[in-house]
Image 1: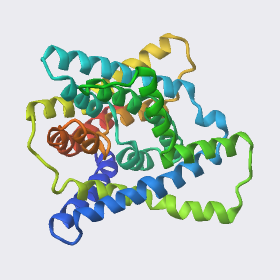
Image 2: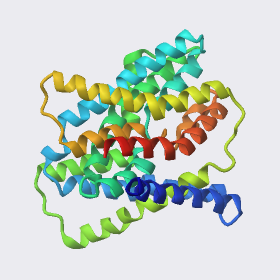
Image 3: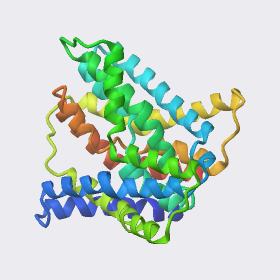
Image 4: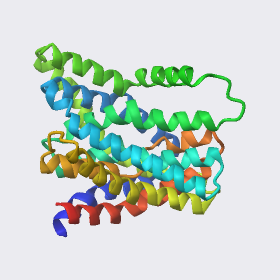
Length: 314
């Protein structure tokens, strides 16, 4: 248990430090947005480029891992959509709930967790997660968002094209594509370049966790608490369970099995709380309060759920 706490405690200590320094007035909530923007637009893209460009492309495109991760998310989407529909939830609130239960925070919490648990694979795992999340999980959630909007006039095909274009403009996706090209072409990375990129990449973990905690201060907490609790539970409990089921399904399909480290990593990746900008997306449909409650609950409870899950798996 002490070995598990040595991994999870530093992560949540950094989150708590961010929360209490903003709560105490040392930093402002707007500072956290600036720190988060730095991580999303510079530090993590640098990390992803280094992780992909310096590896063989076959390591990056681990088909089995991506299939498990994508199938686990798909099963979670189907399960949450069905449950929320049976409960008579409105289409907009249902879309927000599905996104919260299926879009992990691989950038700000998942990567630091992998860095402490599997340091030799952390960059590879982040790259694999980013590929699946940016090209499947998040777009699928955004399609539900758009379909829930009253008076939508665009066709589904146009909608998907618009979402795909938005994905390709993200700095992390651009860094992934450039890294893949460098890997495919086997381009040598000059040492001054790798050192420069490495400086920015090294700042990603601590700053991401710190900004997560600070961003929790001042969130709107007026919304459907029952729905928020279900969403948080879906993210922390249902998503990793569905990913375990996906591991079994993929093995029955005859795909190359994952080694034990990657099998544990894919389940842990599904078990982290929802991504940082969840509330921002939810505000488009007027449910930012519910999303904020779910995010606070999931972030706080994940210290326990992740510790228990790691105790069971490691």
